[in-house]
Each structure stands twice: as C-alpha cells, then as structure tokens.
Image 1 (cartoon, rainbow, N blue to C red):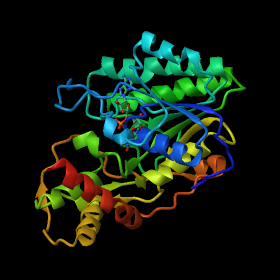
Image 2 (image 1 turned 90 degrees about the vertical axis):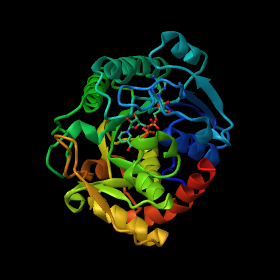
Image 3 (image 1 turned 180 degrees about the horizontal axis):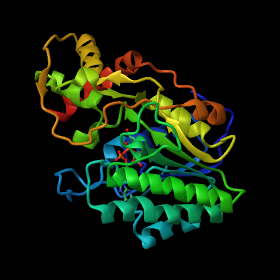
Length: 334
Ligand SMILES: NC(=O)c1ccc[n+]([C@@H]2O[C@H](COP(=O)([O-])OP(=O)(O)OC[C@H]3O[C@@H](n4cnc5c(N)ncnc54)[C@H](O)[C@@H]3O)[C@@H](O)[C@H]2O)c1
C-alpha cells in the first residue's frame, strides 16, 4: 500500500524503537514497499529489568522483526557510545519512536532522560544529516482536557505525557531555528494491531480483552465502561500518518487518531461478536484517580497539513486483527 509519492528506495532510514510495536510495523512496511531502501533499526530490545510497577523497562522483542532484512543496532538512546554507531551512515529519514512508552511509570528522572534528553541527540543527528525527522508524541500530552483534544490545549497528567509535551516544544523551537529541516511530531491516540503482543499489559485493551476471551475468561472492564471513551486507531492508519508526515505542508505537532471515540464497552462487545462468545462482562472498580474519561482527536490540522485520512473503522480493524490475536494466543500459550 502506497500512501503518497515519496520514494524511499535508495534512501537510508533510521527507526529508533524499531523492535517495538509501531516501529517494527514501520520497518516491515518500508522493507516490503521499498526493497532497495536501507533500513536501520536502533533499539535496546528487552532484558529482565522491571520498573516498580512490575512492567519491563523496554518492550522491544526480536519476534517483531522476524523477516526483517535490514540492519539492526542494539543500542540505548541514552548512551552516547551507542548513538555514535550511527555516525557511519548518511541518514535521509529518521523515525524516532524509541521511548519509555509505559504511561504508568512515575520515575520522572528516567522518563525525562530517556524521552527528552535523547531527543536533543536525535535532532542533532537529523541536523547533521539534513534528515527529515518524524517522532512519536502522544495523546497523553492532553491529560484530562476535554474532547476533541486539540494541539495547543495540553495538560499532561503523568510524567510520560509531560515528557512528550516537552519534546513537542523542543521540536517547535528546533523548527524555528532550522528552517531547512522537516520535523513532524505525531500524537498517537490509542493504537492497536499486530505486533503489540509483547507489550504485555501495556498493550491495547483490544489485545488484552481478546486474550482474556481466548483464555476462556470473562472479559474484565472498569465499572462504567460504557461511559469511558477512547479514540482507537488501527496500525495501518498510523503507518499512513507516519509516511505522510515526511512531507508536511508545515512542520508541527499533529494528532493521529480516528477522530471518533468509542467506549470500552463497545470494544468488548465487538470482540465477543467476532470471536463468537457471549460471556458477559466482569466489572470492577476503577482504581485510578484522574483517569481520562473521553478522548477524541481533533484531526482537522492533520487532514489539512499531512493529508491524513484514517480509513479503518473499529469494527474493520478488529476484524483484520483477530487472526493475529488468535495466532499469537495459540503459539505463545503452548
Ligand atoms: N502504542 C500507542 O498506543 C502509542 C500511543 C501514543 C504514543 N506512542 C508512542 O509511540 C512510540 C512507539 O510506541 P509503541 O507502542 O511501539 O511502544 P513500544 O514500547 O512497543 O516501542 C518502543 C520501543 O522503544 C524501545 N526503547 C525503549 N527505551 C529505549 C532506549 N532507552 N533505547 C533504545 N530503545 C528503547 C523499546 O525496546 C521498544 O522496542 C513511543 O514513543 C510511544 O510513546 C504510542
């Protein structure tokens, strides 16, 4: 699937976080459609270290990259020596997706170091190479701001959201100081689709509920889930946005959501219908204060400046995704 006329063949492309969910999808998309591009995945992968919340410190997984034929550098974006390994390449495009992506990590220092400090380094690499840089921001920059969430009206409610909000400010400043560079930040809303399995309990609710149902367990939702809304976006639409963000009409920060909000109850109902089950729902109290109750991306500016048009409805996306949920559920639970 081609999203625009950019020809990535013969280009050198760096994907940080390329062993993660979105990054590995991007790496394999580019490989499939531009077979003579040189793709470099830079990722620290995973080890056994966990945050105090019990989740792994990084979610990169080799299994996301099976079939990938490009270069892989196992490196940490916090480590100058590792970043120096990129010095031998003349990089045309940088997709900077590496981050602590877990919104429930509250160690501010590690989040700011990993998400913010490294961004200065990636921007310096972009400047040196005159690369176009597209980086991941997040809907978490909005915190509990009312829907539709709109760029310019942010109030992050956790260190992760704050780190992305600061990245956006750094990018805006860098754009002003480097008029020849193309820089676009993408505020992803709730992304779902193949290759998120290894994010475990930080994967989308679609993956988590799907696995619960396949385990034969009644899907679990917070009480009042019919009133908790999210803007869910399928991975293919995210890839569309990332590719189109390489040619923005103007540099900036852009929302990447479907523009439509759906309840968690809807998710569970669609999944049960598709999986042919009728197990009901087990409701339990929501333990989180300040929980976002409604997200819906305002995508007007992304439509105008990136030509971004989400195509996949939640019903379609779940239909596309179910065979992969089933496949992984089977092989990973042997
Ligand atoms: N998936 C979503 O719904 C969503 C929503 C908003 C924003 N985002 C952002 O999009 C980007 C990609 O998200 P994802 O869902 O693919 O997450 P992910 O956790 O699967 O991918 C992030 C990758 O970065 C790597 N990484 C983490 N720390 C690193 C470090 N110090 N050095 C090198 N690599 C490191 C991880 O190993 C992982 O492979 C992230 O920046 C995330 O914050 C994602």
